[in-house]
Image (cartoon, rainbow, N blue to C red; front, side, top):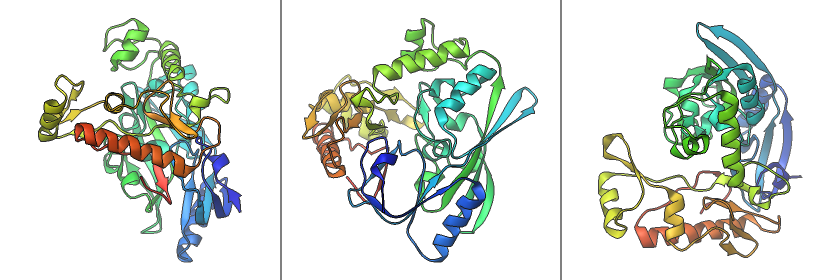
Length: 343
């Protein structure tokens, strides 16, 4: 049996009953299809950066995605970049910046593999995957067919997609991104990034400058993997920013007048989870045994010395979630995928 902890950025997770690696899309499909025919529980494992695996591990087959390859073509003023699911995301972003392909530069430093980006609708600093995806090639375990799904078919929403809403159905094989041919970034849409760059929101800056500023911001929050920084032993942001209905927002305003938030279409309001957590009494560095909230970023739950267990981490997550709900009436939702466990 193979321990799964070394394959996750948290360094947590028990053993897999069986563990195999797939270095081609054909082998990946074959392994999953064969397991499905035998009714074997199957976990498709990417970079492990957005994953919490139970201490008991996984009683089935774990297929580690190791597929590689990048293909580039032109479509008018855009470049289409088709990337196999097992490619590392951050080196891909670095290449797009070096080549003068604009559209994902503000997602630099995010750990994980390309295949996970449409599942989570990964995003940061005003950019998200939904803005650039042209097509996702995926194996549909229900129909047993490989399909090319256009962006409009993917059900993208804030940090989610149809792939995430039904994790047992699709296996992402490759992703095609449509990027702009320019050495300038997209319009800077995030105030914190604009401030760091010294520009107004909406301005465009050289791609390399945007990427470096993002990396500086992420490093300051312990969000760039670094063996020398214990705060990076995390799954990134553990909770998503709550999106409240008008009624829920009114209730929060009654409990916390003047709370920060952003108005969204349809009367919705997005509230920063980090603010809720801190105001509920959980500051940076708040510890529960061997696990703690990051000393740099309130949204990250960390296993700094590698001495914790998944049980420890989930206990901290429950304490934070319940504390926020009690104080503000808002229920935080976990962002990482939970395997064999729940909060």
